Each structure stands twice: as C-alpha cells, then as structure tokens.
Image (cartoon, rainbow, N blue to C red; front, side):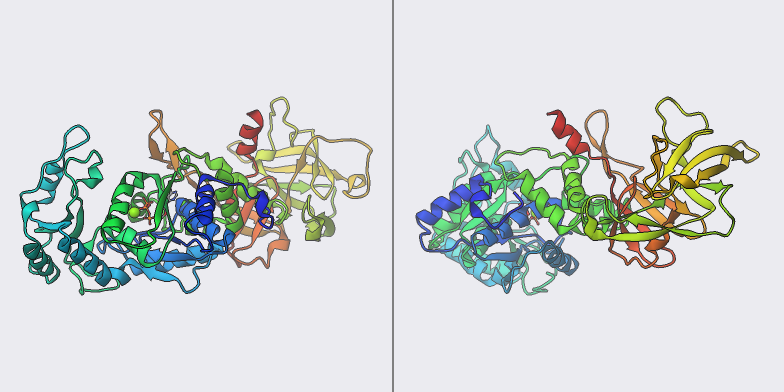
Length: 554
Ligand code: ATP
Ligand code: MG
C-alpha cells in the first residue's frame, strides 16, 4: 500500500475501474482531468483531505492534470481568508495544481450566456413565486409538483426579465430563473430547479459587478465542462443531482461532457466535520480558532503535529467506497503513530513532578549518562543526560499503598531509572495535610545502565529528569473534541484540553525549535508549539494504540 512505484500493487477501487474502462473506450489516447472544488466558506477538514487525495492522487497516478477550483457562487459566506488557507493546506499535503487555479466566478459571464441559451431554447423561465411558494409547489416524494403560473412566459419576456434581473431592477428574492424540466418527475431535483437567484451582496472577487448568482447545480457541471474535466468526483449526496448535471450538459450541447462519479464522504467518530458546525465552534469560542489542535481541520491537525504522510496514508487506508460509513478515529491516530515511531527521537519529560532526593549520591556531583535516542532506529543516535542527587519522577509512578501488580515505586521497592541506576524508596516526606511532597531514595552504583549488571532484577522502569538541569515547560494534552452521550448524540467534550504548566523536560531539549516532534517516554508523541524559555509542547497522540487492539481482536 505504501509503495507507489509499482502500479500493479496499487489497490484498485470502483472509480479507477470506471476510469480504466473510459481510457479504453471514449477517452482512448486521451488524458483524464480531475478537479478539487472547495467552496471558500471555511477551512478545509480531514474529509476534504480524502477528496484532495482522491482527485490529486488520481491525477498523479494517471499522469494527468487536476485543477483547483474555488466554487464561489455563494458570496454571503465566502471570504479570501478561506481562499488563502485552502491553498496553504493543499500545498502542505503535498499536492500541486500548477497553473490551474480557477474560480467559478471566472465563469460568471459564460454562465450567464449559457442561461440565456437555455431561455432561447425554451428550457428556462423567470419565475415570480416566493421561495416558500416554490417549495410548496415542488411537492415531495409522494406528491407530484405543481407547475408555476409563470412557466408559460414567452421566450422574449423571459429574456427581458432575466436581463432586468441582471441589471438590478428587482430585489433579492423577487424573481428567480428556473430550468423548465418536469414538475411530475419522480426525482425532485428535476422539478424546475432554480438556476439563478438575485443577491445584492458584494462578492469577494467580482465585487458589485453581479447581483445575480448561479446555483451550484447549474454552475458545477458547466464549470467542469469549461475546464474540460473528464471525471467530476463528488460525494454521495449529489447522486440524486446527477440527472440534473447531465441535463444541463445535454441541453447546452456540451461536447465531450464530463462524467459525475459519487463516493462516500468520510465520517469519523468523535468528530464533526461540516464547515458550518466548525465555524460555530470557532465563533462561539469553544476552540481557539480554525487551527486549534483539537479541530479536525487540516490546519488544526498540522498544529497538532500530524504529518502530511500520516494523513495521506490514512486516506489510502480507508479507501473509497460507494456507501456511507463511520470510520473509527483511532485509525487516524494509528497512522500518525506509525509515521512517527521510527522517525522521532525519544526524550524524557515529567509532566506531574514528584521530587526525589537520592541520599547516598554526593551533593553537587553530576554524571552524564549515555542514552539512545530511539529504541528502534539507531540512526537517530545517542545523547548524554545528566544524573544528580535531586531528580523528578511522575507522580503517577509512586504509590504509598500500592495495589497488587503495581511495579513502580512504593516504600521499600526498587525500580530502574531509565538509562541510569536502580533506586529504592526509603522514606516518604509529607506536608502538614498529609500530601506526599518528596521521596528519599538510595541508589546502587553497581546497577548503572550499560554495564551489564545482572545481579538482580526489578520489574519497573521509570522515566525521570535531573531537577537542576531540566527545563520547565508547559504541556498541553488533548482529548476528543466530541463525545457521544447515551442517546448516541454528539456532544462537546468539556475536558478536551488539559494544560500542565509545571512540567520538566530533559536538558537536551534546550534548543528545540517550534514544529519539531519528539516522543516523550511513556507519554506519547509531542510537537513543540512554542520554543524558547517558556516552551510549550502539544501532545499529538498518546502511545496506546486502540486501533491495533481492535484490529487484533477481529
Ligand atoms: P462541508 O459540509 O463540510 O462544508 P462541503 O461538501 O460543503 O463540506 P465543499 O467545499 O463544497 O464542502 O467541498 C469540496 C469537496 O470536498 C467536494 O467535492 C466535497 O464533496 C468534498 N468533501 C467535503 N466533505 C467531505 C467528506 N467528509 N469526505 C469526503 N469528501 C468531502
Ligand atoms: Mg458545500
């Protein structure tokens, strides 16, 4: 799956099967041409990544072009901030539209001419019904629609009214242009759908040039046609719109019309995906912004520490299918672990410190010990870590009254300090409220790591840092942004962010730069969010692989 060099090894899917057939048929000796058509009304999310990987991925595989097209036909919600972020995200994922960046708004003039052509063919009419009336007249699955009283307008009258619509003679909602198809069609999308509406709002690119805007169902097939797209890949909810897509292409006599193919959109557990909902989270300040590390946006995942490779592998792994399903988010987490486990250096960090004084270690002495940077990849080298009389361990690694099978530190027990010595807990120091504030331990110089000591064994190995040498840092731990309540409804997880301000990180981390990734032994993978004296680390993912467990059980 990982190897893209040998095409015979690339798993096929139903879209490739269609393409392969077309390349042997009507596209013989031609190239396919795909596009990714985001609406610039929000930041891209992991669902869009699936569509990007599919469209740009097919192009790469078939050595063919893929366009980026901003589907900007709804000026009320669109903004250049989104246009910029979308380009940044696609590039970051590693895809390239080269010189093929387009906007549906580039085609407003041509789309207008297409609409005029439909009117001239008697296939479109100006309708004065209100939005509510149009809905009522449309009927439903059981009930056929009712024809608009304006359906019988003459071609001349329609041409004049449509031009007046364009010239701003009418207000928002006063008139629309509709295709004249069939109000009794079993497919409701074919019941004289609206193709142009009046909206007197400024467009982020065309300004006030236009006050009528084409509907998606009209603009999309024709934009595809204008760009010579061969395969217009979209999500399943457009399946019922395909007859309309084809109708416009046929009535407007488009040669070599593009073909719409639908696939299942990505749904992830513990995640809401629609831009509308994500925008709400930003606006209501549930999160800190579109790139909050908890967001399923591409910019959020980037800041969280995900790599483009992990996201692309994820999209490859889940594949493309023709029916909707819910993907377990642990698969995404599995993919980032797989990408990081052999490529990141391991260091030690204490997130919830408990001080230990090693009473038989000389005061003022420091000893630099050898430590491997990775258990699995020797290319990552070694480092030196300071050992001294005062150290920190994580509070969770000590219990005064341990249950059975607790192999970490407790009074009288001996454990190994990673890369260092065995220590034994001799005394527990408490404050006046009975809270443990410090431990007194002894170490055994014979047990030094790397010397091949075999005298006795201990069951627990703890991470630690030298108190004096370590760097105080902030660490942010994340949990899923969404949870399911008992009724299966998505609710916001109030505890999705935990900020630990009192963490101690190994001295070797003093020159870390923002954006660098590390494994903190026993805590997971982290990315440096802010470097320097007040460093901040975000946890990308913990070490526990829930997906591996699920998979092995199957
Ligand atoms: P949203 O509901 O999240 O706003 P959208 O479909 O309205 O999504 P667009 O900007 O119109 O967003 O989408 C651009 C492309 O990405 C479309 O081709 C769309 O089908 C695809 N896409 C959007 N969401 C997903 C998803 N969850 N899985 C796969 N593809 C998606
Ligand atoms: Mg949309």
